[in-house]
Length: 294
Image 1: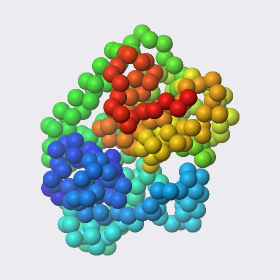
Image 2 (image 1 turned 30 degrees about the vertical axis):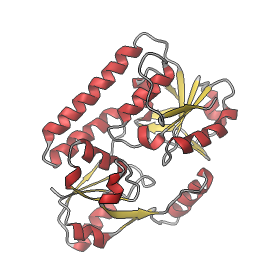
Image 3 (image 1 turned 90 degrees about the vertical axis):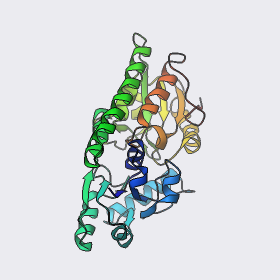
């Protein structure tokens, strides 16, 4: 089956299912595994925001959306040339990836008959269910069930390791300028890691808030996991967050790698957060995952 992934998390799912050789198209943001972007055709482009501050990125996004513009560009001719059979996309967030409606319209225009699967999870359980959905559509349901079973075993191991321990109050900052609460599956990661999420919207969209509102929930630990950034960028932003939470520990996490993309590495994220909340209860994550800044 010829597969095209229009979001980074779907690319990770495809590789986790052992279907990397069948993947023919990706987006410009697909960086895991690193070979995906260099060995596959790039069918979705977008603005390179490297070098832009979080505030500048936020202003650009709001300007584009208010004007009815698109943040991503589908290279329709390139997509048609790949003759895909299954396209993986989403309708969860216009800021994160191209909406599935754009893809369907393009396929109709091009006369392509590819199957389109939209992956739109709002909770951690729903994320795991998308792996099964992809596996079923791609013809490898057994692999998908095995993948999910292995991930659930790791979650159970974390739960056992932190059982009976005090659950610290944890705020996750998904964006810093302006601040955004944690939403979707992210609070579930904190709960699975043995914490109590505060200033969060479990199973709902993340929303803009204020530092005063975040601090009012009196978090003991603050995790900075900005969407679109790995650990280096998250750490730089976390250092600006410290002044808003003088009584809390402040940690930076590789947001794209471990928290914000709904792919298999979310379980790595649970394990990394558990290592922060309960030192010694679980193994420390590898370098490049977390960094305490205060």
